[in-house]
Amino acid sequence: MIRRSRTTPLLLSLSLVLGLAAGAAADVADPLTTDLDRILGDPRLAASAVGLVVRDAGTGDLLYSRSGRTRFQPASTAKVVTSAVALDGLGPDYRWNTYLATTAAVQGTELTGDLYLRGTGDPTMLATDYDDLAAQLAATGVRTVRGGLVADDSWFDSVPLGTGWAWDDEPYYYSAQTSALTIAPDTDYDSGSVIVNVSPGVAGGPAQVRVDPPVELDIRNTATTTAGGDGVYVQRAHGSNVVYVGGSIAPGSWPHASYISVDDPTTLVAGLFRKSLAAKGITVTGGTAFRATPASARVLATHRSMTLRELLVPFLKLSNNMHAEALIKSLGREINGEGTWPAGVRALESLLPGLGADPLTMNMFDGSGISRMDVLSPDLFVAVLRSARTKPWFQSWYDALPIAGKSARLEGGTLRNRMAGTAAAGNVHAKTGSMSGISGLSGYVTNADGRKLVFSLMMNNFVSSVPRDIEDAIAVRLASDRAGQAQPGVQARRLNTDKADPRQDLECSWTKSC
Image 1: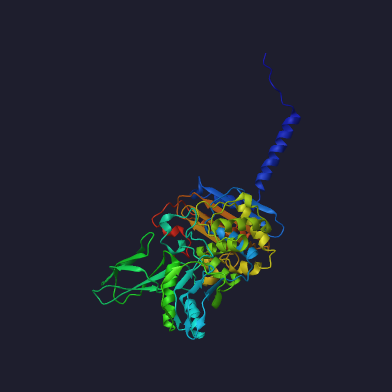
Image 2: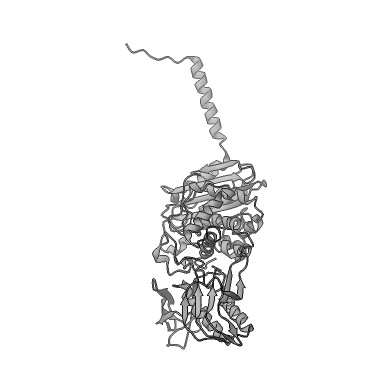
C-alpha cells in the first residue's frame, strides 16, 4: 500500500518563510554584482572565456569575482607583471650602457687594432646616440682605426623572436627582433624597426623613398607619383631586409610613413655606426666582424640610457613590446647570468612572490604578452596591483599607466580616446591589451565614494571585433559606484561580428592611431 505523505502546517510555514527570505535576498542582491553581471552578459561574450576580479586596493576585500583563478591569454596586460617585476629586480634607476672599447694601443691619431661596439640591450638607442659615441672617440684624437669594427651583441643570446610569436607578424614593428645592439627610429623608442617614408616625386615619375634611421635596406620601389594617387604600401619580405614599396601617391601629398621591423638589427647598426665614424672624420681600415669584447678591453666611450623609471612612460603608455623583451632578457642576464628569454622568465618567477603572486599559477614565455602561450589569471593581476602599492617605485609606475580620457598622447596612452566625459576619465589608470580574440584591462580606479579599487578584466575567444566598450562600461561602473546606485551610459552594445580589418584588434598604439 502506498501511503500519501502529509505536510504539517509547521513545515508549510517554514517553507513559506524560507521562500520569502530567499526572494527578499534576491531583491536586495548587491547592485554592483547585478550591474557587472549585466554588462558581462553582452551577447558578444556568449561562449567566450571571461574573468573579472575587483578588490578593495587597501583591505583586499573581494567585491566581485568571476573566473578569478582561471588562466587567460593576457596580450599586453602582461606588461603589468613584467614592468613591476623589472622595477623590483633591476631597480627604477637601472640603465643600459653602450660602449666603445679596444685592446689595442693608441699611437698619435691611430688606434692600432680593432674597435669594439658593445651593446647591453638599450632599447632607446637612436642614430644620434651612435653619432655621439663616434664624437666621443673623435674627441680623443683618434682619426684612423688600423683594424676592424667588431659589433658585440653577446650580452643577449642570438634568439631574435619569442616562443609562441606569430610568424606572419615578423615584418611588423611591434613584433621586432630583440638584440643587445639595436636602434630605434624615433622617441617612441620602437627598437629594431625603421620608418620608411614615401614622398611624391615629379608628376609621372617614381615616388621618393627615405629610410629613418638610414640603415642599409634593399628597397625595391615601384611606387609612382600620380594625380589622384590611390595609396602606397610598404612590405618587408619575411626573413630578409628586402622591402617592397608600391602603389601611387599624388603630387603635393604629405609623405606616407610606414613602421617596419628589420632583420638582424646588429648588422644594420654596425653599418650605420661606420657612417657615424666617417662623418666624424674617423676611418676604419678593416671590415666588420661579430664577436664578444675581450674582458681585457678598456672603454673609450660610453652612452648611458635613460633610467627604467623614465622608460616606463613610453613603455606602458604606448604598450611597447620591445621594451618588455629587453627587460626580460636583462633580468635573465643580471639575475641568472644569461640574457635569454628562459633565464629572464626564471628571474621573473623568482621575484613574483615579492609582489604577492604565485608563479606556479601562471606561464609566461616572453615579457610583452604577444606569445600565444602566455597564460595568467585575474587573481594574479589583482595581487600584483595591490602589492605594487607598497613599493617605493609605485607612484612612478602608477603615473606611467595609461589614464582614461587624458588626450595627451604620453598621458592617456592607449586610453587617451576612451571614457572621456565619464567618471572614469582622469581616474582609471590601467594597462590595456588586445589581439585577435583577446582583450583585457587591468589597473586602478577610485569610486565616487573615494574607495580605491583594483580590478582585472580578461576576455578570450570572442569572435567579434574587440569589445572595448565592455571594458569601458566595467571601468565606468566601478568609477561611478555610489552605494550601489546604477549609473547611466554603461549599456553594452549589440552583437557585432565585423572582422573586416584585423588591425582593429591590435593595441591602438601599434597602429599609430592613438
